[in-house]
Length: 192
Image (cartoon, rainbow, N blue to C red):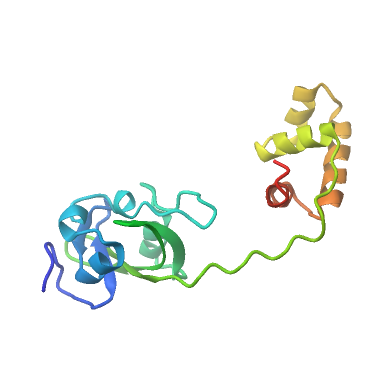
């Protein structure tokens, strides 16, 4: 049975079609079955509001600046994204593939949706959490805010070389090589 706004193609797979403004043009029966969201609710809405996708860490994956649509439009082949989509029953982990199709009215984008495999278990942390001094925790917290060493030094009233020494020791204790890795590892250990 064709859905409202159906373009000249069909599929039994759960999919929806949207335009460059990210407005849903077609929401098929497979998409209804997978999400519990009806075509009447979805068609005409913004795709990122309907899916409301989040990554495995809870970060926003679907938003008005959809990078998947932009990259596919540029001709890039993207692997399927795994995200937690909004459904009528809460959230569901799905795998989402993006396809760009040329049409007379401009490019159209298809998101083909499937159930995603279970999230792989997190690898165990290498031993117990390191014991950090109060100053190291303070520096680590500021690194988690994305602040560079120079700003951390200014905020703490320390020499930049002293802060860099704290950072070097933090990296060694956490077993990492960068500020980003340090923040991720510290979150794994629940230090921040």
